[in-house]
Length: 309
Image (cartoon, rainbow, N blue to C red; front, side, top):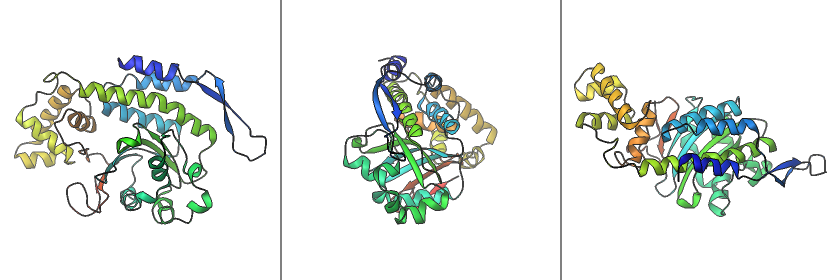
């Protein structure tokens, strides 16, 4: 199915409802089904994201949009392999203390309310932490007091991109210190999820089914550069490894981007991974806002701690 067809079906056929007061002052609002509508700005956002041609571009543009929607919040793209206990996170904006937070979440992953929620039942629509665990209980957990609160990530909404039953947590997250996310913000995430899931699935499928050799004929040197990108090396560092000049490496990078249909290093690594040129858990650490860790207590290369740039 064509990407635009999937996208049109996902956002055009959605049935949304009105938020109405529960009639009890501070009582939570509930959704009243029956009205087919979507805020024009959401449609514009979805249309803009539909212009993405690669998974990497889609991720980058989605993070930018979430930054605009949730001004002042920390937004992220996350991939967690539940079986291998490895993960990667791309943050906007990046802060150095987030490295230890990723490590802490990994150590206490089984205690995370959203992890428990998504692995215990089939619904993978967006929820807040406060929707699945009372705040008074959550505020007493080590996860909050030792890991999340110090980086101002007390409240969170996760927008899943694939079913958690697949063994993968692939999602966009938005977090902040206070206040908690409103019902309207939660409904915004639920509306956005429709197009985000469709686009991510379509782009991933398109990259997996690309005709062999169409965009993947890389020279030996280009393959080497791609591998070093996945290891998070700069052009200068790659030049030292390959005993060549940084200018030569930059030329290889230009060729890589052209052949892989990307415009940046993250996109090249994700594209290379999806085409089988890299291991599944390879994700560029070149970006300051990217953290990659092994939740068994070692990073993905076998050393202690998390790896970041």
